[in-house]
Image (cartoon, rainbow, N blue to C red; front, side, top):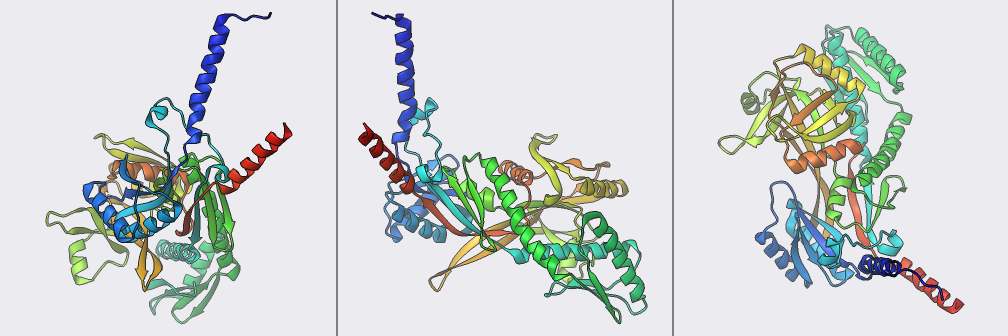
Length: 474
C-alpha cells in the first residue's frame, strides 16, 4: 500500500480549507443599492440620513438599510425595481448637493474581507455591473475650437501691432474682425493669413478663407474642418474615458461608440459607482491666467471692464462673506489639455498640491511669460461642470451648471517652464484633479442620458445550461 508522510496530508487539508474560504464570497449575492456621495461643501451626516428616509417614504420605497459606508451613504434595497424608484426620488430630493449613483453592494461578511477574501472578478454577463450611456456635446467642442482660433487672431494682431476694435465669433462659426477706420484692412488680412498659414504648416491646421469688406475681415472655416472637429471630439473622449476607467482599476470594461454622438460604458462589478460616475463624467480642469492691473470692485460696479480682462470670483470669501472679484486676462497661458502628467503632492507648508508637467509648446509659453513678468501676479482658474436634472411638467430636463473659481493669486517669484506646482485645492480635489489631468482632457462635455444596473441573467443562464450538460454527460 502506497503511503505518504503525514505532513503532506496536512498541507493538502490546509490548501483545501483555504481554497474553500476564499471561494465562499462567491455565494453571497450583491444587494441593489443607491450610493450617495457629498459634493464639496456638504457632509454625510444624520441630517442627510433623515432627508433620505423622508424621500424614500414619500416615494413608497422601503429600504433594507441606510448606513454610512466610508465617505458615502449606502441605501440597500430589496429589488432592482425599488432601486430605480429610490434613485429617481433621491436625485430630485437631494439636487446637485450630492452625487446619487446606482450600485451593487457587497454582502460578504466583514470577517471574510479581513482575510482578503473577495468575490471572483467576472464579466458583465456573469457578475452584473453598471451600464452608462453618455451624450457628447459636439457644439461645445466646436465653440471651444473656434474660440481658440479667435484668441489666436487677437494675439497675432497684438504681436503685429495692428489695432483692432473687436474679434467676435458668429453663430455660423465664422470670425469677424472689426478694425478702426484708419487701419489698412488688407494689411491686417495678410498678417492673419500669414500667421495662420505658418501655424497650419507646422500643426496641420485648417485652410481658412478670408474676405474683406470695409473695415471688417470675415474668416470662415471649411465645412470639412467643422465636421472633423465633431468627429475628433468623439474619438478623443473615448480615448480619455478608457484612460479614466484604467484609473479606477476596472476589469474587462466595455467602452464603445453608439451612433453619432453617444458613448456606451459598461463597468463589471463596480462597487463605488459614485466615484466612477464622477471620474467618467467630470470635466474639471485648470486654466492659468495672468492678473490684470486694476480695481476689480470698481470695474464690476461701473461695468467698465478692461477689454483684455474678464471678471472672476475668488474661491475664498471676503470678510463680509461675499465673493471677491478679480480681473484676469482673457488669454489662457496653459490649460488642462496641454498637460503631460500630474501627480498629487504637498507644498512647503504641507498642504495639498498638484505637481504639473506641461507639453513643450505650453511650457515654452509659460517660460516666456514668467521671464517677462517676474514679480507680477498669476492665478489659477478651477473649472467644473456639474450635471443637473430637474423635473418640469413631469419630465426630466437635463442641464449643466459651470462653476469657475479663481484660486488666490500668487506672485511669480522666478522663471519656470513646463514643470511647476499649483496649490490652493482641498485634498480630495487635488487627488481627483490629478487623476483627470493624467487621463487627459475631454474634447467636449458629456452628459449621462442613461444609467442602469445590469443583472447577470445571461451569464447565469449559460452557467446553468453548462452545469446541466456536464451532469448529463456523466
